[in-house]
Image 1 (cartoon, rainbow, N blue to C red):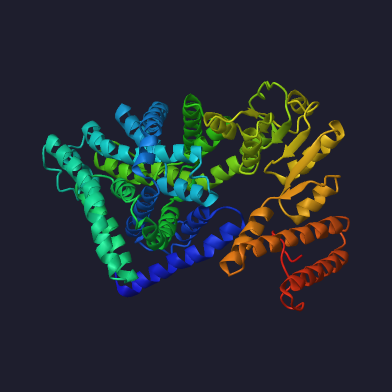
Image 2 (tube, rainbow, N blue to C red; image 1 turned 60 degrees about the vertical axis):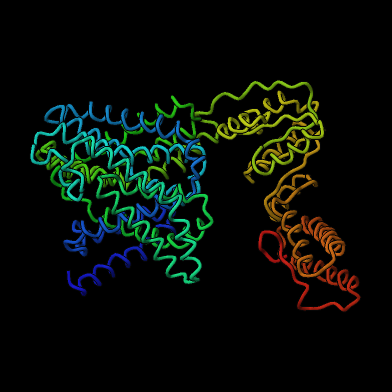
Length: 622
């Protein structure tokens, strides 16, 4: 490839990434789907702008997946990885074995024998590490319990590629490829006996672990002492590239090797620096990887064999969903988490392309089967963000709205002083304070996974929808003095205020609101005790900022106390004029003038027309 050809190809891929990502984000589709669609458009099936370099580009971009696994390893300390052992080797093993068995059995109807069915089952059992982890990271669900389960399965899948590469040649009938085929072409140990290969593999993994623990940290310290950021970045890339080469030479998944290196470095002092330095490389390479996958989709099968491709794709996704849903239920996941888990892993894997190439060399796949499997995997990867969006936008709201919900808990209590609706980050603190003071509380929460998690930590929480009058009755609403509304949904907060006012007028309501506009909405229902979500924390921060800038702590506390009083007075006044913009502006000016007078009197100075404007906690000018 000449320099001009390389530059032209780079320009096409980078332009596709730059154009597709903002459009996909604006449409709410996520960047991964945008990259896949862009790849399909510039690929040989549509505009044919990628030339014949698609496979080379994909191999290069797969380095992004490797960097991503290294960065994920940096976030998991060995102790955390040990905590996930049940999910990795229990749920992960059952997912690979169970899915391979189900898909392999189903493919017996279309394959040429059990060998081909076994190969198909193993190829399609895997899921895309790159797409799933990138999409979940964008949505912020990777560190949730279900996110950790999904990650554990993907990690085991990466590990399982190694025995698959060893098993398939034993099943194959092509003797020439019987020791590893193309997938092991670069391996230095392929000619050794099996026991020697196993020892060398273990030695390579031990070298990565020991090197990360005892060699990399001193080297990082030496490099960091140079004070040159570029050298630190170069050394970080050298580690990832070196481990990738080592793993490839002994026939191990490079992603697994770099992940282990990341885990070893997770508790080092250079962890955050490594994350910041490698993140840009990961993001760019993953974008190119997804574009390369999209460009590899063979749309000719849509015209030559549309029925086979369509039925194969639907059957594949359906079998995966059914198998994963059953496994999630077996492992005790809640309904919403079962759905998230199943839809997240419903696509094929980038490793599937490697296994297809190996199986073709072993004569395990015949006729149009390789092209069909490649198209099914690529299309399932392209559909994956849409499937996860379907779960998020359609399935999950049905759980929240009451469809498919488990039955509400039977609530038992020995009298109640206060009912707390919502036990998230806001309600939990309130509940802990009241319980510590010996107050009798009944806590209700609609998130079943949250309820189960909190119970494991010893909290007394009941599962149920606080908007149900009968559930409030059984929670003790007739005898309680107080209803604390801390739900994480502004519409439901307002609705619960109306329900409580109508059915339990004796209850005193303390209501969490999100911002000033939401406060106006709740106060219009007759509630005066409202608590803005981030207001108190922001005022506390302002007090500490004043102290840091030289104000005496007592004076700083006095200043924010006065500010609270003035702001509270303005809030009460302006609530009656929430829909009158001109009146709100007049009141805001009066409030600023009053604040300026009060603080100027404290300082013994004059009011200022330029320094006395301030903003509400939601960022809008008051």
